[in-house]
Length: 97
Image 1 (tube, rainbow, N blue to C red):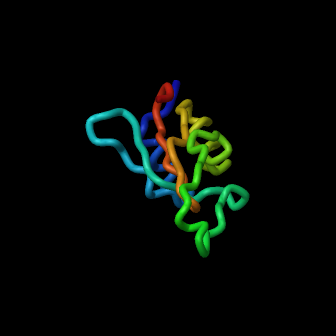
Image 2 (image 1 turned 45 degrees about the horizontal axis):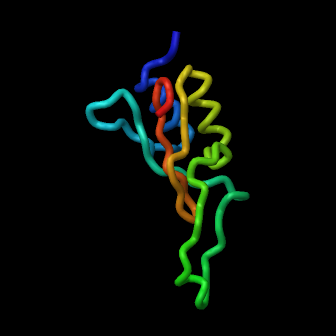
Image 3 (image 1 turned 60 degrees about the vertical axis):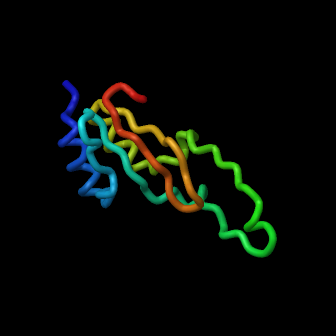
């Protein structure tokens, strides 16, 4: 039996991911979490800050390992949906987005 979304959110809160909150009207949650150190981008300086930066916001490696483990051991799915230089936007749902 899979855990409820409240159980998943409580586990994430214990890990320090309180920014992941329930999506009003849906059985899912989302929010921004810090990227793992190896995926963080250095701040751009000089003329490079004016150029667009391409990011692969759907790369599963962007989700911190402890967050992924807490969600998946409860029978839920966590997916990255976007990113910035230092954070990833994630969605937690029962069957994926």
